[in-house]
Image (cartoon, rainbow, N blue to C red; front, side, top):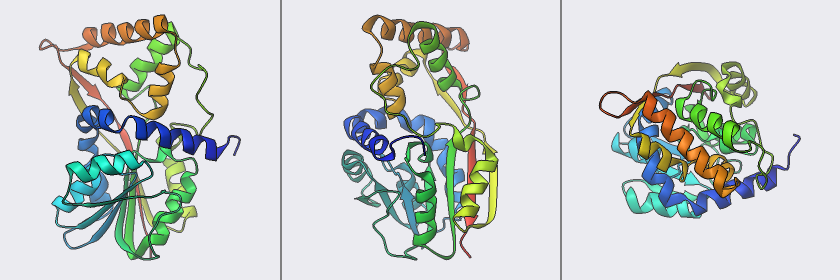
Length: 273
């Protein structure tokens, strides 16, 4: 590992605590369509004990509870846990680290993680912890975005920063490769190294309909590294970046003025035998 994992974790935790409410306001429409496939891949059914790791605002745990499961969401950001508890009382939530889960061995029938892997300093530990807290026969599933050249809003943002700002602006600690788990082989390798069998990796198609203005507003409440990159720019560069994204989005919008964005993701799962 060529970076300070603890420093990166502290950076991510501080960021999510700072932007919990704003993130919920912009994230639901871009993540909800990916939640169902994750729960399906983990085999979530009524009556099961289900853990949603890096639950954030609680979407995955709430969906599992809605299917009749006994759902628990865990997140290392206290503000995210408070946000989840406030909005989804049908599920249980607690603060905890994905890399050292606060649960006994064999506590759950299924473990899910929607778009959390890129935020972990040590994702191998998170997968190993999912294995540990699963009962025999239980299944773990996680999703991760495809690379920025394929996920529309990531590509638009990076093009704008490259043209008008600095992709290496200061204040952001070095961390793991953001799109490491866009590689299906890497997903399978990490699952199998943790002991999972019957691994399966597939691509899922997610589409998001959003106005250009809402897309730009979402940059201000984005994931921690993206938000930090935007905040690290000069005021002039930041304004130019937002204007560039808005202009590209307006060109891409349909006759109704709405963007139909392609957001493909990788879905990986495995069974604890």
